[in-house]
Length: 331
Ligand code: DP6
Image (tube, rainbow, N blue to C red; front, side):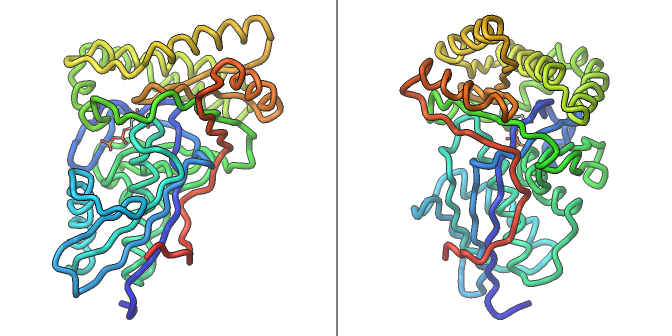
């Protein structure tokens, strides 16, 4: 153990092209299926963890404000797992996000990737390798496991804690894809993704989805490796709509799309048809549309989006880096 048990990590969120929706195991976040994502360069969480024998309980600060609700409970429960394997003491945790939480930009992904990496590094011992780090991040939030590695990442779902981990499919330089997030709402969602996974896991459509996924995953990987954007976009868009259908028709129903989301989807499809430009979309558990295109078309597509949704913020992401340690401590 070093004298000052402090470390800082930065992590990008990620957007799933094939989604994690439904779990086999809710304690360790073992998913029903493999998933594939891209790290989002502009959706970044920075977290500093300080372990201290002088603290009587954990403290969590988000954007400089102390957090005392369920979010800090979730962090403490997660830190308990790390304490079980390392040392027993409390931590002060400070985080800042470059994007609004709870918007369908998966903030728990960047949050738990940064938290796990900083918390373990702060003990000053040798860091686990990236595969093991992806397991640590996954125990905090499933999607976080895909934010440890850079670029395009596959989460091998597995069947237990050891067999469920992430690996890089291609580095960020492999393909200049863009995800332009149209931020339509920054309100927290009514049904959390953790709750959504529970509803989905018992959904009657799930069996049919699971039967189709192996072929879809293989086709998406093929399109990614070949940089075949049209094949890629068609798979991703279909996948997004399938998962939304499961969300909407669950009990209770999770209707994450807003009227503006639907309006944008219609407009995007009409624009794709009329302009001939390859542009597709995906959605997460939120109303914001993730507009996907190749870098060479991004300028025109962003200009079109600005005209179409002049009041919405656009978050223009490239394939991002993995989780990194940093010297820019927040506390
Ligand atoms: C719709 O990773 O947020 O973004 O493991 O319960 O923390 P927990 O869930 P979470 O689920 C993300 C779901 C999704 C799809 C995806 O990222 O694959």
